[in-house]
Length: 595
Image (tube, rainbow, N blue to C red; front, top):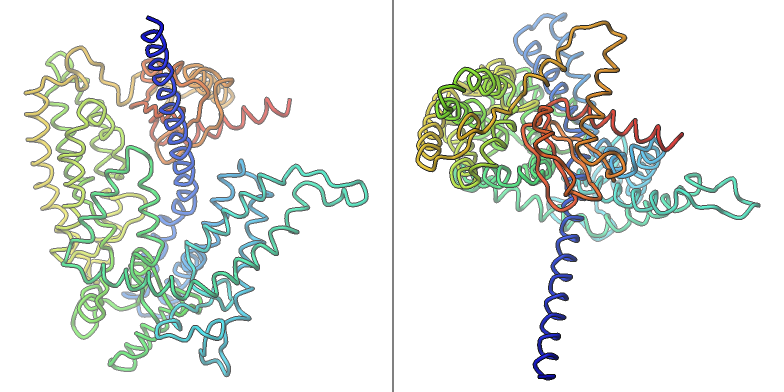
């Protein structure tokens, strides 16, 4: 009997240990997810600048190409100048944005990021040997073929083209040092250097040390990345886009897709174009010089352009529509193997697949909810088609039919890229892949060979697939989609719409907005339950102490399209209002701390 009791106690003890281990693993994974999501949010800050910069560049390129008068060239140059400076200095912008994100929006942290990145960049110059202006080696022993292409002008400083990777590592060092030592109290005699004034004493030597490490190892790493990027570009047409589209859409529910987007848009994995490649072209002198001048204007003196989005913007900025009788985008692909736009043009998903899904949701709603479904879901369809904001539709069916999301919708995302590549389309992107972007980055530069019009055919094909699949799946499985089986239609509630569009005196608007913010806070357990608040383009992202007190139904009534809870991480989908809510909640928290 005692032996049986001991055995039972041991089993219970083992069971308790397993539960504790599982809880520990869950908390650890939750922390990792929170950091990655926060990192993705940091990347969104500089990415959000790019749509406007791209529009300026596109307008400037169109004017310079088609208006050959002196006035036209001047106006085009003004537009291009305003945008080129942004694209040429993205690494330091990413560095600052990441530091701001992980230091509580600290201006001091941003200042330390600038100092550290400048030291990191300038410290490399002494190890790059270019006697008489001709490249010789890096760190005395790096003179392999291709290393010359890794040297560029960054902020006017001769350094290695470390791009996004160098910026991220500098940012990580700054964040760690800032958060660890920002409150340091030194002895009275040197107390002036307490707090953040002490940080340069650590960060400047650390940045120099990092620069030395990079000059030793980055040439090998950079050549490896360039080789890998080249192999990706040599894959059968459309395969790269297919894989990228599937991976990105699969990561979206976890908020990690922005990391993949940044790697494709702003790293060497997205491709590269070197100045010496243009210099060695067998072209008529005038055309060749035009390409080189546009290259130098775009890069501010750098010897290479990396990343798919930057390469597309460079080609679009060239004041030529054709080269040797061939549209310029097609010429770059056929002559130099550069398929610009391959990671940016899944327009048929936004304008076709999502429209098909929305129509299926409307037509499967019960008769009594038909008008409401048309009003609410129809509005979401229009927004998705015009602007490319699709999350309200995506999350609506993700929660009720995740199988459809991963079996149908995710593969179609990759197929959209594949199809656009197969017809030699070269469409850029600004904010998202809506009709507005298609006009700006496809129709406007159509003479350059964007072939944007193929998107409309693929819209119909993908839209038909999603409509038929979703319609019969919802009917056959009797899913509780909006307007069915007693399920409310919640993409946007009438109350939320009225609050958002309330036309009253200016003096009452802040009060209404504050009331709404407090209502949201109350339904996540109050501010005492909030650890941190951030936002991406459409989602309010929170880390909370107790996720069990989050009231999903109440948030739905406030206009949330959905609420995702993963451990202590909560994401509430409010559309574009999410950024405003996060800002107001953080301001309120800071005010309470100050008081």
